Image 1 (cartoon, rainbow, N blue to C red):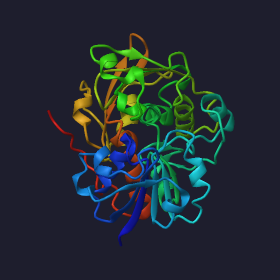
Image 2 (cartoon, helix red, strand yellow; image 1 turned 135 degrees about the vertical axis):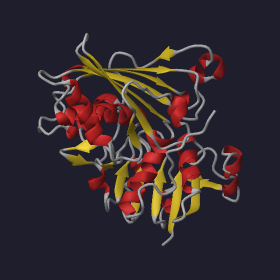
Image 3 (tube, helix red, strand yellow; image 1 turned 60 degrees about the vertical axis):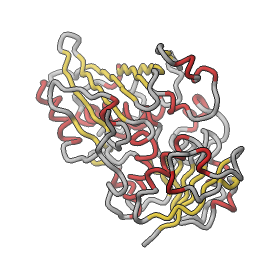
Amino acid sequence: MTYTVAVSGASGYAGGEILRLLAGHPDIEIRTVTAHSNAGQPLIEHQPHLRSLAHLTLQETTPEILAGHDIVFLALPHGQSGQYTDALGDAPLVIDAGADHRLTSRDAWDAFYGGAFHEPWTYGVPELPVGGGKQREHLRGATRIAAPGCNASTVSLSLAPGVAAGVIDPSDIVTVLAVGPSGAGKSLKPHLLGSELLGTANPYAVGGTHRHIPEIRQALAASSLHDRGDDGIRISFTPVLVPMARGILATSTAPIAEGVTDTDIRDAWEGAYGDETFVQLLPEGHFPRTADVLGANTALMGLAVDRAANRVVVVTAVDNLVKGTAGAAIQSMNIALGLPEDRALTVNGVAP
């Protein structure tokens, strides 16, 4: 069966990456691409690397144009998806790459985003440990999927095995992320200009203000076998912009739970990801580089036990536009439709 697809926000980074991956999907026909200010222009003018899609023209983003497809991807700025999802009730499958349907707590939405709160959808991180199982079980047959925030899924995948196994104390998580500016979108912002980024590293959203914090707390709380909500999840989260177009390198630490051995710790992560294709724990003593995941749907992870500080250290690398966004969305789509989970996705990066 061939599924027809519409992609909104197709002139942006996330929309372009969704299109790049879908262009190689044998079960997908990309029928419609939409934008806002760029509507009426050829897609190829804004995504010149998508040569196989040169025949497509960007249309206006309206519910009427998005309707009538088997699958709709929304790659819009946060706070803009809800106005369309409310009008797409008849669409068989809708996948939102924005934040509008990620959070279950209205209070958290009000505190970190503001504006209209929309119902939470099935979270699109298949490998995430959840209540003794994996999130992919909730994605089978799903019709509404919230793709994750790239930083949020990276940190959540990094620490969820430890929370699920009870080998770390999630009340004192510290994570620092080196991130590429493509995660901030394609619209012009002075602090994202090349002249402002090259040769420097710039922290932002310091002091507990980053919008991905409640998403991480929500995901880690779901990973716990104890139904205590996210009250026991405390996280210090500091992202740093670095001069690489793509990529996230997240270094996350948490205290070791009392009585836990080094073997217990490594067993928790190996048990969680040993059979996974796209989340891979590296051998002991090895740690990933962002270059190793460029263009791939992989999260590569290195694990260390720092007994002097009594903390577990997890270093995870992802391509923020693939595993962090578009790849997670398409992987979740495959599961929802009953297709092979890895269809149109690769574990192989691009080097050098």
